[in-house]
Length: 478
Image 1 (cartoon, rainbow, N blue to C red):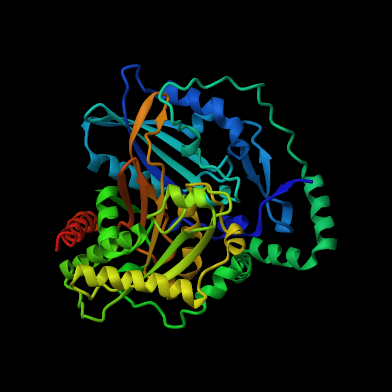
Image 2: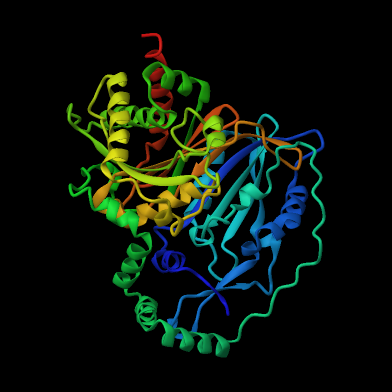
């Protein structure tokens, strides 16, 4: 029997168009070691580790007539050099040029006839740095065993030797069209209703596709129905264009911990309060009307503490477990960010209260419902938030904010130390901004993915995140 895509994963293929490519990404910056860090090293590293992620040598094969969902098949002509690419900035390349390149790369759809991922080695950065930009389609993030390609190349040891593959990889033969049709007929007998839905989706019946996602989301949809009041309208929900802008902000994790300790919140609350303060100042800089009662609604996927004592000891202050912990539970929240509040301490308390209120009101989504949407591997929580956003951004929230606790030890790729890591979270229809946040090795890294037409000033918002961090730090001594 063929390895068939899940209903959710197939739906992301159906819904994708040129204004909303369905891939998640990341921008990691490395310090080039004395031994060098070039394309050949990266290529060899990935080649040796692809056996850990068999999906990355597979492509999607459609079933004739769209009778059933597509299947995963080994790519008979797999070419690793197509997926691992080389790029360069004019020396000495600066961060703005890197972010422009990331925006252009993220604007392009992945080739649906090949395995749905790409990775770029970007050379030419100033200060002896190189960057790695990754793109992974959300259809690849299909469960608890999902691992992002960017995670595969990282090690906790600088000089770890990468063993050769145990054996030469040989693709399994593709099923013939006749075999796929026979399987489709078998499925038609066993699940006739599903075949009807797939035929309708194949002729671009968007309604069938949306219903399929809604059923797969299950608990997510029921939780979101509690927010009966539509999200406020504003500049964050403009029609989505084909191009993106990307900007970043940086902070120190110890500063967030100090604010958390001073005000009795969680690090995640502090992150949301910082984003709230930055959005407030950004709206004011645009001349938008901001009254004391003005709010913006955020979709905030977070992981929730389990009873695992070891995990609590590892991340006692975050309010969430490190993604990837076995047994961790994941919840999604709709939070009204108080952008009309001018006092940073009051903003933080309002955000903390809102997060607690959601946890107590039954809006927490059971882990079982979200496992169908994504997995627990570290990069997949960003994908999880994007998946939820693709169905509800129009009417229920203005901005997606994903915050993923990362490792607090240095990571290396082929001997090169990773200095920074910025997530790139995709936009949904009529969504102008997604904010991905990742903590790593003592830093907190914000990646702002924005629509090029709707937010030409996303770099202004990024700068205001830094100002909002300083403002929150100032409350510790107040």
